[in-house]
Length: 308
Image 1 (cartoon, rainbow, N blue to C red):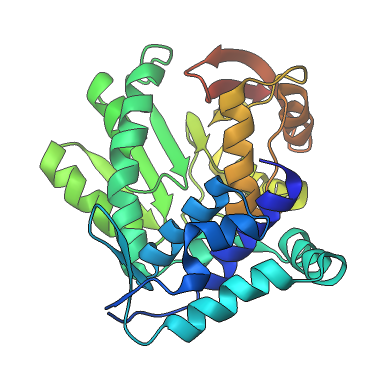
Image 2 (image 1 turned 180 degrees about the vertical axis):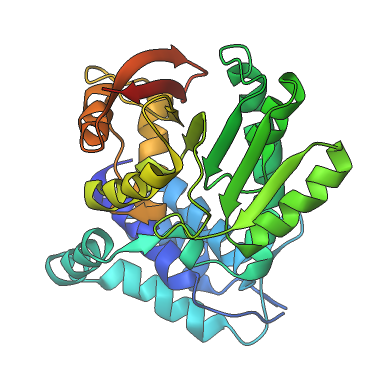
């Protein structure tokens, strides 16, 4: 997919995500394959646009064909014409500037019901990662604080693998609610605390480990440093920081890491994938440094940071 087509697809997603539903007619001529492809948009983009229209309930798909939903023909015509007839020197530039300059954090732009669904899906994903991580960490009789642990999949796996592990997950209301459901379902001694990772209000208590999984890559260096400084009152010179995320190699990056980074660039503008050295530099601001690294899967690496 070349640059122009990528921007077309991105703009289609952007525009169509803001359009509501309806129901019943055949496809207008403007939306037929031959019309779209002849306008210069390739077939893969055409298919993507149709899927976006279906998701936004502007089209119906019965498994064999697409049909127009009632009352939305003019809306669809306007969108497609806008994509086909745009002046690339104006609209592309304006759209690209908006994409790279406006801050955007995924969890600030979803509904409560979407966040609930996300948190339930996240549990299985992080639980499976946790089972691998448990092979590399001994948390028996340890006190652990995880920031942004969502519904607690990682924590559940680690608590099940380590006796007398006192594990607290910090997150917002909805993931904590979902997490407490899974806590009962799995019969694990996990504590969920609603809090802001940028302004932790928990009592100042020392932890043996502080876990940050898929958190730091969501933010720029300044925001990450803010998070780390909030951790200081919950740690001491014997505390270990566990970082689990898509750590870059600094050379030729694996495909999975590149794709993960593309998703990140859309969902969390301002976010940043980092190398081990860059993360070490970040932690040096709170007098912690690199100790070890373990590759967890095709995307995730676990780094251990200890006091300098």
